[in-house]
Length: 268
Image (cartoon, rainbow, N blue to C red; front, side, top):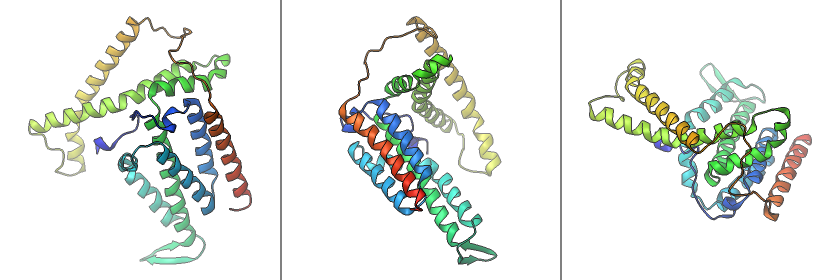
C-alpha cells in the first residue's frame, strides 16, 4: 500500500505540460478545482473529465501511474459514495435493501461526489507529477508575493510546503525499510484483531519518528551551512517567464470557470 502513495513525487519529462510555467499550472489547477465544486449537471462533469484526460494525455505519463496514486484513497472514495447513496432522499425510490431505501437523487449525488473526489485527486496528481517541488515553491512564491506587503511570511510558507512534499517519498521509503527490518526479526503486522495490529505499529512509528527528526536536523544544518536565513531576499537560478502557451492556459482556465458557472446558472 505504501508503494502506491505517489503524492509529492515528480516524474521528469519534456512534455508540453512539464514545460509549462508553474504559476500557470497553479492558476489552472485552482480554476479547475473551483469549476469542480461549481459543476452541477452531467454536461459540466463531462467537460471537466474530458479536459482532465486531455491534460493527462499531454503529460506523457502513463494513466496506470495515476491509477496507482488513487489506490490508497479508494476506501475514502467508496465511503463518500455510500454515505451519499444511503442518506440522500428524493426523486423516488429505485431500490430497497431491507429497511433501507435508495433514492434516485441519492444515486446521482453519490456518482457526482465520487467524480468530484476523483477529479480533484487526479488534477492534484497531474500538478505534482509534472512540476518539481522547487518549481512549485517558486510559482507559489510569485503568486502570493502581494501578501508580503501585509507582512505575511510567504517565502517561509512555500519553503515549508516544498520540504513537506519532498519528504513524503523519503518517509515512505523509510517506513518500508523499517517494516522489512521488523518482519525479518519476526514481527507480525497482518494477523490478529484491529487492536493487536495497532499495537504492532508501535515498533514502526518510534524508529520512523527518530529517523524523521534526524533528517530534519540534518536538513537544518545543511541549510545553515549554505547561509540560508529567514526573511532574506534571495535570488533564483531560474527566472520564471510566461510564454504564449502559459497565457493561453490561464485564459482557458478562466473561461472554464465562467462556462461552468454559466451552465450551473441555467441548470446544466
